[in-house]
Length: 157
Image 1 (cartoon, one colour):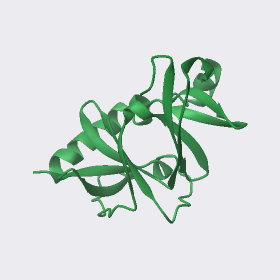
Image 2 (cartoon, rainbow, N blue to C red):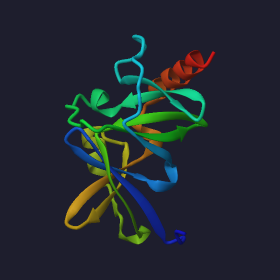
Image 3 (cartoon, rainbow, N blue to C red):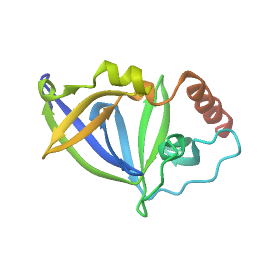
């Protein structure tokens, strides 16, 4: 059980990036799932997969960020935004660890504004490595969320 002062971090690789998500935001991780190819709705969709007896869209961050996909053993991290479950395709899940909330470093606002990277809310440090922690609500913009919701509705009709 995690205390109020601690946070669980799930660390994953997506292309050349090592990133993290708050463990509370993760519903489940499935290794090497079967993913059906999508229509032409969106360039950042990898396709769809079955999750708990429903078809859910799978977002490919490497496509969204235009980075290479390096993984042979891909995994899907299932999350929910605004009560809509979808998967995030990653190269691999590397680690899950707990740390004190007070040990997280705030992602500098000036970097957010200068770079347009507003989807990182904090930085965790583990073993000398800095791990950007993603803000799940900001990974996709409003338009992309609408596409995911519409796509999910269409594949389950």
